[in-house]
Image 1 (cartoon, rainbow, N blue to C red):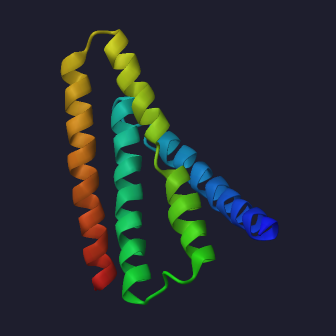
Image 2 (image 1 turned 90 degrees about the vertical axis):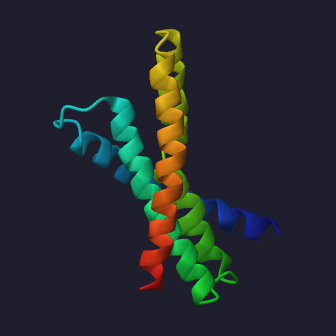
Length: 128
């Protein structure tokens, strides 16, 4: 039992390191484009949602749900670290402190709406 937990933690950590580094790379890559940090975070979250939809479909389509280590590596470790929920919340917090409530509402609605759309597109791409 303890060895299984240690193995899972190690696998999640490996996926997390890869996801966090790719997230940092992408956010810096979009920096020269003159868009706000909240929009760069949205772009990274859209990419993560697309990948999550793609891999979720593949895991279901090819009956890979029983392969827990692959599921843990990609869907929990990699995608969990690639998506930037904490940065998203921090942007909302900073905008709230600046009393930019219109931007807060737009960010929340656009993030939820477009991430669901990108997840759906990912599942379609996984079906092709």
